[in-house]
Image: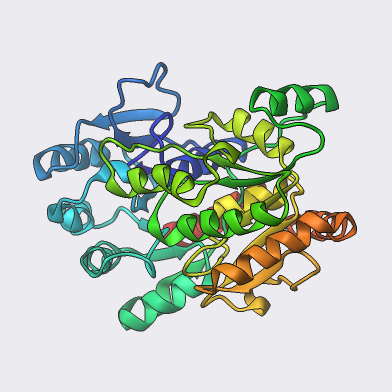
Length: 375
């Protein structure tokens, strides 16, 4: 398994790779990981080889090492925060196949639609030599296959599963954690989780929350995310936005949380909101995590259809058009704040909807791909 990021590095794709690798091991495979070196990593776990960075000299040496191990399959996860953005990475898979032409190569492309056009060119180069290209959602597969018709016959969809396991939280523990943030039993806590990027609709959420708060002062917003305001201008903008909106005292920023702490914080929330600017899809692990934790959720529809998502408005979630108005998002959140029966209905519907998204199923579908390319 080749991946740019791997825990404790902070990347959703790295988290996904770890869970997939662990589940494949539980299914009886031998899985070894090649990834980026991390000073915070205390134990190697499944990692067998690390690179300091993904400059050409480093990954050429990594390829030589990989070829010497007599693996049955090489599986590349792309992109990943710790690959960096160097253009030379685009030739990694060509180099691998040229050096070891009989080694089957599988590539999983986690993001395509929302990426910069230069990243799309890198994707085109990386996937071309692969025997199979896996996508986490049908919308991603369609978009990529349209732009690169030569991969159409080898493209597959394997949906992801939530990477955050559910931690049992007692009523007393929930009360204590809420109290740590000044949240009382009378407050309604809206949760949001994920890596802060412009397409997540976070500014939209903050502006809508300010409108909700003006009519419902008992509402609070819990932002489960890491903000690096010193090095990221977008993060600095987000951090200052609540004050300009007059809700600075009601927006709670947790900073980075370990997976088990994310679960505990989800347990403290009464509902969640994920207003993705490009719409929800089955590759959105933050949305899947919310559904796994039984939270009534507001989200947005973009290119992915309700039929593809198997979501019905008002049954499993509240669905809004992607890129809608602040007023429409505020109204949807207000509707959930005001209606406990609707929150109960969405909790039950969402809990049923998430049942097929299990890691064991994903691992077995991945194993079928491996067996096919080996044959």
